[in-house]
Length: 225
Image 1 (cartoon, rainbow, N blue to C red):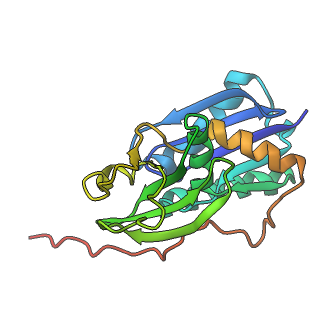
Image 2 (image 1 turned 180 degrees about the horizontal axis):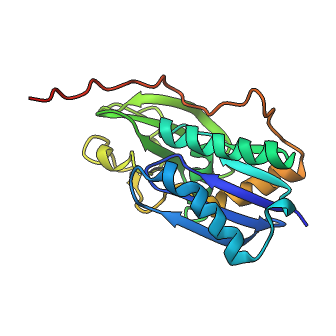
């Protein structure tokens, strides 16, 4: 029995799941903004209560490594590492954009896949993948304008994720396709995590950090009159 706990906290919504031998046992989701810190531990507890499985039966923890929300990633990784330390089990990480591309690949049969996570203004975190999830363009923080992806749009590119919505009016091209409803999922994360578990592709607990991509910027507080 390979029981994996998957924790996905890359965006304002978050989820966690239990998989046994790569098959989903139970999943919990939340779409409430800014509740990761207060609700993640409660959500994980629910998984074990619903499944009637014991935490000490876990074989590994799988986390979405980023990029994405600085706070969400920090909380998710800290929680995952804490469980791994307590139970002396390995940590597995999956790139968030690859996770999203994996989810989209089940729906698309042609063209390139471009998952996008929202950054600031017209900036997104994005990458390009082919149908086999081979990286065509590495993860980057990209400011989107009318010429973005011009070298790749000789073939269809499917844009999706919370960052894609703000790019619809800018990326105007017959081969620019936009998909809705694809968010990072703990269910899919568990599938990818199990594949890495079988290959013993584990992270070093002591030194592993989320893939923030950009430094955290503290916003100047609003003045109080």
